[in-house]
Amino acid sequence: MARGTSFVCQACGTAHTKWVGQCEGCGAWNTVVEELAEAPPPGATGKTRRSGRAIALERLTGAAPPPPRRATGIAELDRVLGGGLVPGSAVLIGGDPGVGKSTLALQAAAATARAGTPAIYLSGEEAVEQVRLRARWLGVADAPVALAAATNVGDIVATLEGAGDIGLVIVDSIQTIYHDRVEAAPGTVGQIRAAAHELIRFAKRRGAAVALIGHVTKEGVIAGPKVLEHMVDTVLYFEGDRGHQFRILRAVKNRFGATDEIGVFEMTDGGLMEVANPSSLFLGSRDAAIAGSAVFAGMEGSRPVLVEVQALVAASPLATPRRAVVGWDGGRLAMLLAVLDARCGLALGGNDVYLNVAGGLRISEPAADLAVAAALVSSLADQAVPAHTVVFGEVGLSGEVRAVSQMELRLKEAAKLGFRAALVPAPAGGRVVEDIAIQPIERLADLVAQLTPDAGRARPRRAGSA
Image 1 (cartoon, one colour):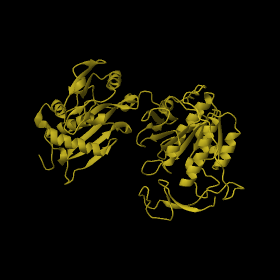
Image 2 (cartoon, helix red, strand yellow; image 1 turned 45 degrees about the vertical axis):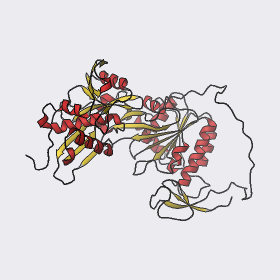
Image 3 (cartoon, helix red, strand yellow; image 1 turned 30 degrees about the vertical axis):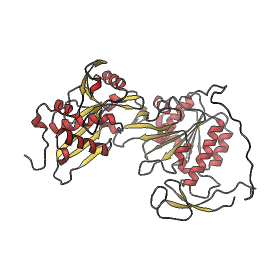
Image 4 (cartoon, helix red, strand yellow; image 1 turned 90 degrees about the vertical axis):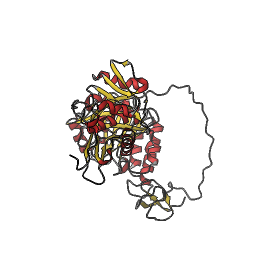
């Protein structure tokens, strides 16, 4: 084929016939870059065509048993992967700079090699001596991990082909790898797509698990074309706030396991440490007697997690009150405030509202509605939520509290940590589960009445009021 020039968006991968300021595919500005098309193989001509050949079709049930998963030696990572590494799979790990992606990858390579599975660590950003220095800091320098510093995908694949049996290959990072037949800078759409394609083909052909580390953009998504996430089998995001020592590894795509599964780590002086019971970690410094605080029993994948939801409702001196949210959806907070105003008569619209999920965890499930409402009402009335009580339930626009899934698991986790009561949707009320007294909440107004025995204390505080 003849070589040509195309203009490709670096955000979504859309090709254009000419340069444009705004991408027609995703609407991003100044992301279209000129790229040369892939060069033909040596000896090929533009008229060379290969006729297709018939391929053998097989049934879903095969004679050979599926290959067993390979444990990485890190239980939290294995949990997120669905039980371990699947031979021949490709895993993409993304995260903010400095969150600990390379640390996690090196620790996983060391644990895998110590378990008897050959592991290779390929760095495109650091020299071999720099990787060794980090390994000594992590205490894994004695692990039988093969190291190399390379950026040419052709050299990498040739090296892997001659390396014998391989269980795990880590490439840090995919944005630094380039392909000889793509004349573009490393990190561009064409280079990332071509390099990832070669590495994934090697993984499928040889049965080795390949883990690609990817950078993220300022919007928090993995840099490069979105097609990269479609090419791999599993996409993991490593989340964390530099102000907290906790790190969350979250699966957003997994062809061989559940999505939205999380693994919890703690960043220490010796690297990442697994957290077997994240609920006790997130509630470790909680003071149960403070108004504006409620404990939410949530689900992260198949794991129940208890977190503290903190709220502060204060009089606003501004014409437009502030709304600050950390760890929850700001749009859902606005909806919940409207329901409290319209259905419960609290008139929160004139107050500043601050909401925070303690520990740096981000909550996305609607079951947190009731816990957030409890924290807001508690702060407004200056009345603490009853001690040793967990709260969960979805709130509808008419003020009704709806049932949520996996209630038994949530209550078991709460009982394990010493909680004795639960404010939950009404269908589950009137009984005791796992030594926890269930207090039914049918409507949001019932919660307000329970948390504000003195109705006068729940009056909204407005700017200028005494």
